[in-house]
Amino acid sequence: MLFFINVILSLWVSFAGGKVKGCDLPQIKHGYLYETTFFRPSFPAAIGKAYYYYCNDNFVTPAQQRGDYMKCTKQGWSPAVPCLRRCYFHSVENGHSLRAKYTYLEHETVDVECNPGYSLPNELTNITCTEQDWSPPPRCIGVVKGCDLPQIKHGYLYETTFFRPSFPAAIGKAYYYYCNDNFVTPAQQRGDYMKCTKQGWSPAVPCLRRCYFHSVENGHSLRAKYTYLEHETVDVVCNPGYSLPNEHTKITCTEQDWSPPPRCIRVKSCDMPIFENARPKSNGTRFKLNDELDYECREGYETSDGNTTGVIVCRDDGWSNPPTCRDPKEKCGRPPAVDNGDLTSFPLKEYAPGMSVEYQCQAYYVLRGDTHVTCRNGQWSQPPKCLEACVISEDIMNEHNVELKLINAKNRYFKTDENIEFRCRNGYNPKTPESSFETKCQEGAVTYPSCA
Ligand SMILES: *[C@@H]1O[C@H](CO)[C@@H](O)[C@H](O)[C@H]1NC(C)=O
Ligand SMILES: *[C@@H]1O[C@H](CO)[C@@H](O)[C@H](O)[C@H]1NC(C)=O
Ligand SMILES: *[C@@H]1O[C@H](CO)[C@@H](O)[C@H](O)[C@H]1NC(C)=O
Image (tube, rainbow, N blue to C red; front, side, top):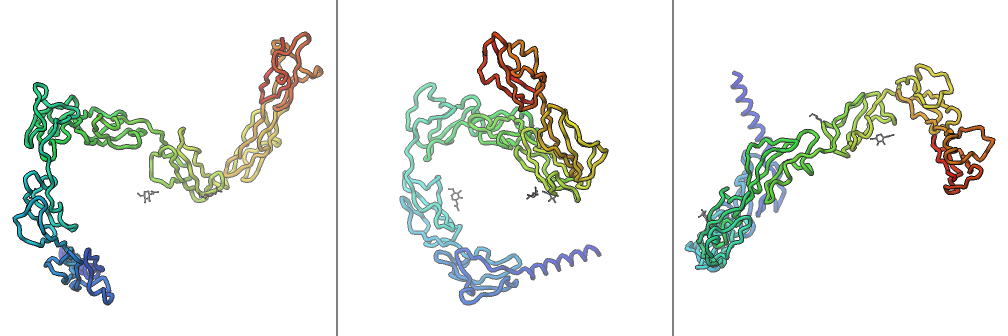
């Protein structure tokens, strides 16, 4: 019962589908619809509807008329190829034909006989009427009388190892030849006959490279063959994180062996990162250097710059920045610690979004950055740095025979960027340029001048 319903249903569907579909305005190659020259019939046309059409010059209907009816069928317009080429046969240059017909229809062939010493291209013996007229044209061309001594790349003629055959060789004459190591004949033998034909030596390329397939470094291949002939290719699958050079996926047996060599090389790449409160806008699993990956924050979450989307870039050393989406209502914990710096207020355990704290540096340390740090999206903004002070060493001054210029300077401490002036000890003369006696504290580092 179910079966019958199915059959009836599908019959009905195909009938209804056909009826609904009809035929679109036909595109007649090398012809045109007669009706459309006077008025515009409506399309799609119903099944069974027929229109008269004409073919252009040199083209005829399948019944070899100027025009005919084309009919809309369930399979589309009939005839499907309404206009066929008509070729006119006059004569054969440097030859003749035993056929006497004057006109031929597309796809018909005519046997041609060429005069001695002449031939159709590729040793054809007939010409064919095609959409573009005769192919090849009815013209016999002069053929070579013989073949010169062949130059065999990667091989040699066997005969010439014993005596010198005379060249040019006559058409039809064959010589045995051998290929060098790693090269074989087209039939994959060490040697074979090469024959002088009207088109020259055959085979034209007598020796082809044979490539041996052992294994793929850092990868593998699904093909199991051991030897391959010139021009053959092998698909290669590289291990994760590896690729053939220039992202090739196959290697080709060339005259110079495998190209590229069967070796997968490490590629800089990034794996799909783990997203917290976000999802990637890509289905990829591995990303190439400089690939960008867009991501979208979960509803109600934001990136650190307050956006709902972000982008990360695959760099030499991994992803440019971690994709972090946070809840803007999230609170912050204790403010970050700053070396040689302190908060100006008593630290709380929790801070609401938007709250900020202030830092100050210990004596002689210089604050660089924002003194205020703010809680945003559950994260504190960048804290400042307290730049190291310089402590002048009595030992180093003794070693360099220098002392501080301000003798009353009990203070051996200097802040970053603070000027420090030295002078030579009594009885010593400057050994280093005058400018080196006026220096600056640079985040804990002092360059001492010298005297001798
Ligand atoms: C035309 O010639 C080719 C070879 O020259 C032959 O293979 C083919 O059968 C011929 N076609 C006809 C229709 O004679
Ligand atoms: C990921 O795959 C799913 C299902 O295959 C598809 O619907 C979606 O459009 C893909 N997304 C992207 C970004 O390509
Ligand atoms: C937010 O993201 C969009 C799309 O990626 C971008 O056009 C816009 O400039 C971003 N806004 C901010 C404040 O970064």
